[in-house]
Length: 405
Ligand SMILES: Cc1ncc(COP(=O)(O)O)c(C=O)c1O
Image 1 (tube, rainbow, N blue to C red):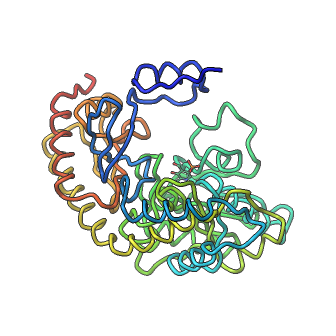
Image 2: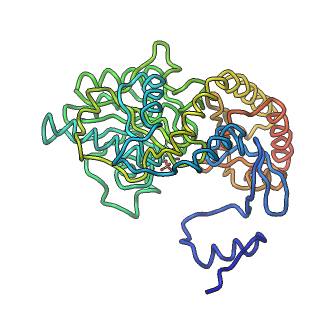
């Protein structure tokens, strides 16, 4: 059988239209390679990549230190399964335990899998106390992933409605409404799940008071407090994790992470206190691929580099938001600029899709979430010059934008 080799953009797109599930609304762009904060399409056109694989390519593309460890590890061992030990899971777990302030770590391959792990701990914790204690409280506009458990606690109807009925026991409340949270959390609550900054929901930060109230309620009702740091954590906020931005820090019982951990090789984790981790015994949870030697070795290298980059994330992120606030003074359709570190949202008065397409045309990749929030999740190596370039393009695109009458 002949296998088609499709490099020109049109034939790549045609093949996908013919053979792939049509579940993605892709932008008409075929990417081929990247270097630093830039990517190139099949025609050689260059784009400043501020979406970075939806927050995955934290060190940009083709980072020399990552290339070195990937090459070395490819020649040694890619996969070993969780039947045996390998050299990198232990040291990485230690690193994550120190960075999160938690005790134990489970490795998986993606964000949604990390949330499944967290949900199983929540259920097992509740069940040890009472058969009625299985409710999980989550927020309207949250996003926790696409598998059934994670989807059940995702507070956006559009992702869930075609797949009902969901897992029982999910209770949704509005973010930052402490009264509503107090009403819904009871002795039947086994877990409260929060994104400190909602990502897919539109870059919405929770207030410190709300997070503290969630901690108090979880303690009062013997429920586990889970922070989903899959989008808003692992260096992106300018701290290892976004709960560490609070002063004093509010500790979760469990935190989940994924996206940038291995900078493009699938890796996620669930980190938990001794008490929470103790809810899962031998044989009760596992994965074939999770925490393989390649992914763990890359993540160890990434953590070393991240230590050096945290000041840059704070500095360049602040600079970026300041420049965007200047734009907001010129364009009245910009409602708000939000975010921390290099997680940035610009809410506008109308759907942002055309802006994203126009920016792409001009060599800038951003995306739009929650219909009208332009979003940047750039690599942590972003510099002021890159921000200047992005802002120049955005200014041009905004000038042309036609807000609906
Ligand atoms: C906060 C949050 N949780 C969970 C997920 C799911 O992660 P994944 O797509 O790796 O399964 C995402 C993905 O965007 C996310 O932003």
